[in-house]
Length: 159
Image 1: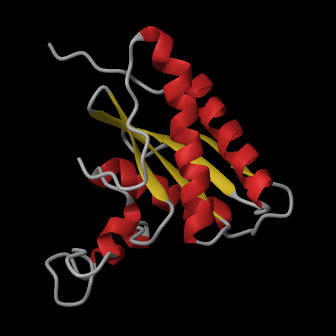
Image 2: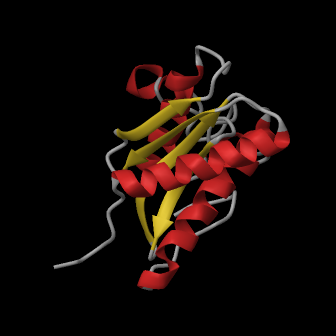
């Protein structure tokens, strides 16, 4: 039997608080969604004043990152992004009733080498969404470090 870490609500809340703190620091209103390994939300928060469309977009990004085990922006990164015109996954964004996100702001949560969930952000530009997403991953790493777990903390993740 293979054992692996599972995200829980406490982990999700720690990640959301870190993403919010980074968002406030850089002056952007974000919606943050943390999903489990199946792509279902554990926690979703829209900062006061953030866009009304943010919750669905953040969930889509987190869903895609968890389910496809890669940062969402890697789908459209030239020259070999698989969702770019002419490449093997062009059109994948229409999968799952349009829920598949292929732009910046979604990151898989990788603990001990396994994808255990995703974090999605909506509200800033790509650089801002990335900064808040990496802050969320870093907060989870700090929370779990004492238990001997290792979290992958970076923007470009492909498992």
